[in-house]
Figure 1 (cartoon, rainbow, N blue to C red):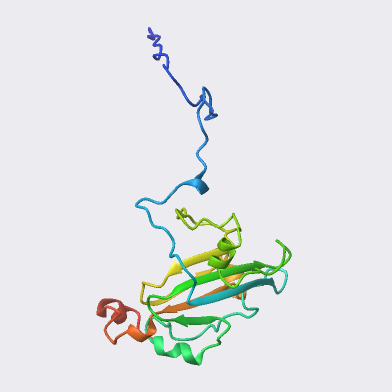
Figure 2: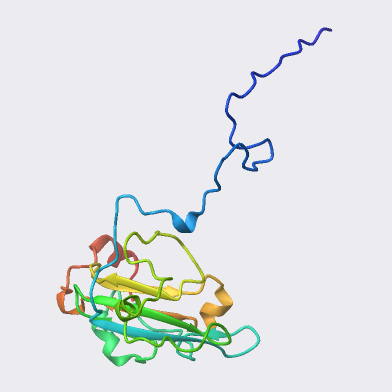
Length: 197
């Protein structure tokens, strides 16, 4: 039995080695520095709605934003958005469609205390350099301390921790965007029929 020896062609200008390390002037890709495509700058100007969230530890496994867990048995706001008024205002928040929203996260035991500015715009105007208001990368992150967006998606959305135990103990809030524009038929019938309260 004969085996043919083959030699791969020599790379002309490699920028990574066999192990993936950069060589010959190659540059590491820093995902946090990537601009979104297409360009999607955060809204400019002062926020209409500011939501400070104090993330605290409530027990060995418990983390919470407002310090309490959401109710277990309730009809989802997607099916009954008007019920937000009857719920705990430390867990559920609502603002009009088109609002500019600032969400500021304060993590117990880290950083330099509370966010010292009235809005993200005020922080940028004061010279705070760590907030990118030009070409913010779109990424799933766990250390972002400030979020700025324009409310353009009618209906409820949830912000929660990715760890189920933390979610169950209260690291969750519900945002209801544009409740004033919601109509009876905004939830498609095929979804409502399969998910009855």
